[in-house]
Image 1 (cartoon, rainbow, N blue to C red):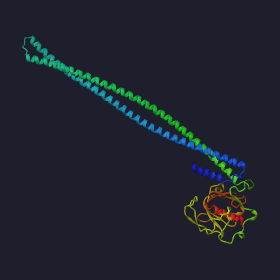
Image 2 (tube, rainbow, N blue to C red):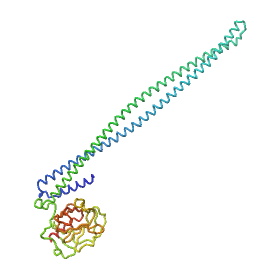
Image 3 (spheres, rainbow, N blue to C red):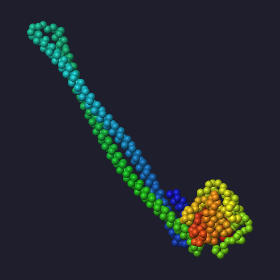
Image 4 (cartoon, rainbow, N blue to C red):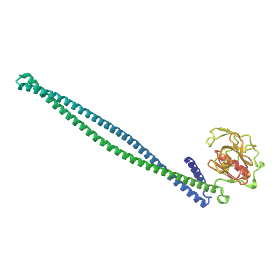
Length: 405
């Protein structure tokens, strides 16, 4: 759609630049200038909106990337928190196991200590009863008792150290969990802020898109208004604007007949409007249509099924109300005879439209565009036919000869 608008704007500019401003009515000139200024303003606003829209899209992509990075970081923090919770649970299990093991060890040592104490009491009773106690046995008993006391003290110290280590690890784990929770909360807040900013960007992008569509509609209206003004200036009555679009009218009192044409089958030395020598000195049997829309870059044979003395030119029928109503557009052959203007199919050479020259009110030319205006009583109907061609001067020279011969 933008390409079509650009082509229409270019065509409008070309039509505006090729006008003869000396013969155009002052009011129509002002309308065309106002339309041209409005088109430029709308185009500039549209370009600014598109630039701003592109910047917003880039910013939205950056926000999305930041959100994805924060989401990945948040997921990593969650994994670390889960791992710390697992470690804490493992430490708790280890602590319970250590406490159980330490308790069992102390109970065994206490049991051994009680046995030793019982043994010593038995020795003391024997001694009190007068029994002789071996000094070595007494010394061994005292040494065993000291060893038991020492082992019990070491076991108690190990138990206290294990409890302190587990408490320290539990506090450290809890502190890390609190830090991770704070970081996770900050990340969630940042993600929420980014989501809100992204939503605002989307709303702004939607608003700008709507404004862009509105500007496009205004631009299209301005282009259509310029086209209407252009058409009014081109196809007004001769008393108002004359021949400013290089248009010519067929005089009704001097319609061309077969006896008016030259006897030469090639119509050589046809005079041109500018006074220069004509390009069409002979009728070619093949045409090179390189650059013509809807035609392949190739050479095409000229139709041979028409009346003698006819001229053929490759053209492209452009979209207009006249061509849309009659459903013929695209590539075709323009055939010009001494009294008719016809359109033939590109490949089959069948007749698509034909109108006597008597009913052609005006014909004109612009850069690459040929136009025929048909009267109300024409067999093909009233309207304007637009043709794209690369043989503009040759067609105009033939029509000039037919209208002046």
